[in-house]
Structure formats: structure tokens, C-alpha cells
Length: 390
Image (cartoon, rainbow, N blue to C red; front, side):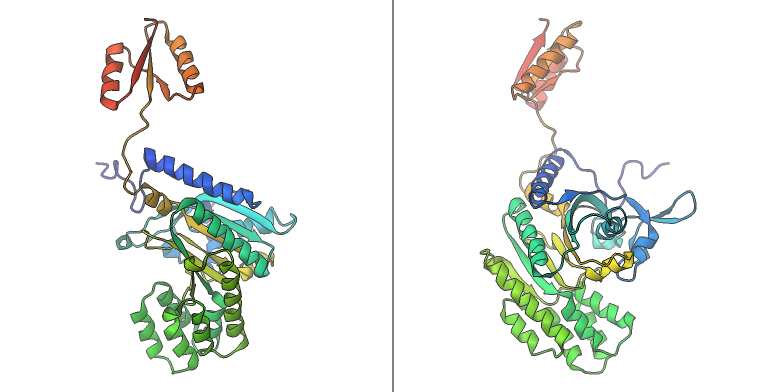
């Protein structure tokens, strides 16, 4: 017995009618935001070599990836992320192009989440990568593009900005091994503050440990920066704070004061981020719909040292939000059903095309008789039937 014949794998689903229509509409709006800023579309393979995602800073464990082998026995994975494949592409096929590279993508990623988390294993994403540009101007380009995307697709949002360098500077001054450092990062990223305190309680008391313990509460307006300055000493941490403050003030000039928050507790799942990091949240959705930041050091893994930054938006979550209260499991109902008596089929198809050109939602009837077509029209709400050859 084929017990899985009529179900989809865990963490996946079928998409019907209005879900597809809304998804396509959102993707077009986002694509327009990207192309208007000079970004060009690229696609990467759904299946990549496992090696690509075993880089030290990738942030993906082998348990979190769907794996298979090719006909040579080499280990392959379904891509869990789009940034790493695009970094590979930039360092190979695009390495002789003029910098900066402005690239965007629209493709699914696949992550093997634990069953009880209730998260999707297949997620449709769109995003951009700006490769070969560094500094404030490049970061403002990324952040304001994210604002454009959110403004075009949702009614209300907020953006939280942090800096990977602040957390890294604190960790570097603590005498801990890599595993402990990763456990601290994961506890902060998952907002598991009980676990964070348990780890820190076992470590010698230090100014850095005190600061890390307070990271989850360093959240708010510009006053957060002043609080953080009192918790750190060292040029790297201080420079990170000054830079966040500078970006925050620049973005306020766009009239975004009520949509901006400084969050020094942002620690992304992927640890390749080296500078500004940010998340965007939308009312009605619990998880971040956009996440991104600067990942300069990642490109060095491909012998292509270049500044780079980008973000990804979760299309599936935005679609859910746009469908709330109006989703129907129905297909598109035509306005006109064009039938044909035997021998008049081509004439009916021609008539259907003429009506469509006039902006009328017309379809050609595949029913053998007028009576069958009439019953279909009554059940589905078709307003008019035309019978060619009558």
C-alpha cells in the first residue's frame, strides 16, 4: 500500500488558485523594486554540492539539509540558502564583470526543520546581493531597497538594525572555546534567555559576559547606543555602535522614525555576517519576513575578496498576510462560456480569442453538449453562454 500517495512531505504544501495569483502579484511588485534600482535576475541550481554549505561560517548543520548523491557518489544538497550559491557564481562566472554586481533572485530554499517546530521546509524567497561595494552608501542602498519592497507589499512594518561586529567584539575578549561561543550565539538567536544565562553562569564573570547577558534588552531607539557604550570597551565594539547610530540617523531622514528600531541582540543564524545586520517584521507575522546584512568575509572563501551585502524576503509569509480574510479555494470563474455545436469547434475557439482580446474573461467549453455546459455555468456562476453554430 502506498500510504504517502495523497500527501505532501512534511513542511511542504500545494498552492492553489488565489495563493498563486497573490504570490505572482507580490513577486512582480518586488521584481519592479529590484529592477528599478538596477538589479539583474540570476538563478542558481536547486541542487548544489554539499561542500558549498560546509564552509566554516555557513551556519548550516548537515542535519538541517536535504541530501542526496549524484551518479559519481558525490554528496549533494537541496540549497538551504541563496547567498552562498550566488557568492560562488560571482567568484566564477561573474569574476571579470565590472563591480559592483547588483543581482536579485526569486527561488525556493529547502531546510530540514525539526518536525515539532511547525516551520516550512520549502520557502519561496526573493532577495538581492550587492557584491563589490562597501561602506555607508552600500549599506543604505540595501536598507532603503528593503524599505521599498516592504512599502510595496505590506501595510505596516518595522525594521530592526544591529551590527555583527558588536557581538563579535564581545566574544573575542572572552576566554571561551568555539563551541561555547556558538552555543551563546544560538541562544541569543533563538531568544532562549534561560539557556543563555545557564551558559554564562558557568563562565568567569567579566565585563563582556555582563554585556552579553544584557544584549537581548538592548532594544529601542538611539538611547540603546548610549547604554551599550557603557557596557563595552574596545575600538571594534565602539566603532560598531557609532556606525549603527550613523545609519539610524540617516534612515530617519526618510521619515521612518516610527518604523526603525535598534536591536543589538540581532545575531543571525548564519555567522558569515560581518557588519550591519537587520530584520524586518510585519504586523500579523511572528517571524522576520526580511533578514539580511553585510558579509564581507564570506567572499574570501571563494578567493574573491570583495565587500558584499544583501537580504532575503520570505514570499510565503507575505502571501499569507495578503490573503487573510479573503482566501477562497476556487478557480477563476469566466464571464462567458463559448460552446460549439459539432463541426463548429474552431469557430468557437476563434470567438473565444476575440472576446479575450476585448478584455472579457471567456473560455472555450470542452463539454460535448449545450446542456452540460449550462449545468456547469449554473454551478460555477458563469454569467453568459454563447453557442456557436446555433
